[in-house]
Image (tube, rainbow, N blue to C red; front, side, top):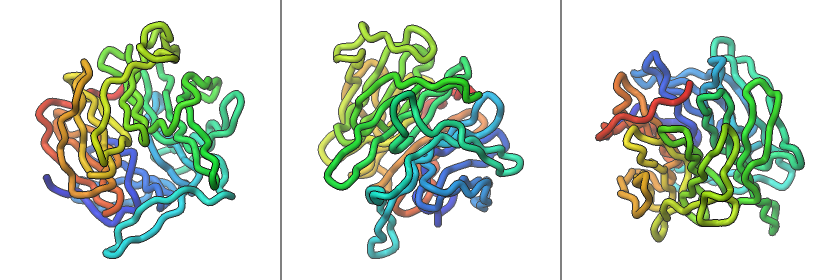
Length: 302
């Protein structure tokens, strides 16, 4: 393990770019940041709120899930820990960023029936649409449950596909594009949903209501955050709590744990010339770790 950079304000949403640099969002910094191979950082866009997940779309722009903003505390030694959003925090949104200029716009601010409470993670399919999770939000003693949406990249349509679902976080697609994976944070379940068409869940295919199947569960003291898929079809999920990457077999079962040096391990992506470098965002310490992976990561749609 080695470290690419530090000093980030809760890094998330890593994207390995073709030029060898890495792009991340800084949830508590409200910005999209590019990290050069030598660790030097530059700000791509000041987005405000709480940018939480990111992906490159078919038009080459960066699509960002913005949760609207979070509070945080600072522990002794400088570690940052996010807290629930203040009661007056505005709803979240999907933003789109021009990487050449840093200009951005709001693409979606609500679904068909409700505003977004906390857009979190995002993945594009090969048809050019994207899935994203809305984590929900705590508002005092009331918990706003979340949802999983499917939307078009040109802003022409959005549908709430899976709802209600409590604290959906990481999201990804299987190598054949026919299975959607969703990680729930507090229940610590990795769920799969069989797809019958782009943006359509086959609700008759799962073991649970709504078409869900439980692929696996995290252990005691472990939660589930964002995820990536490798070329073997394994689902690699960042796990805050103990701090690890949990590698679930595609066929289901107990995960293998790779310990990480930060209890707030938030996300993973694959990069490098052969996609065998895993980049892992470490939230509380503001670092990005790099590991050699035993198999190439799954190439993303865009």
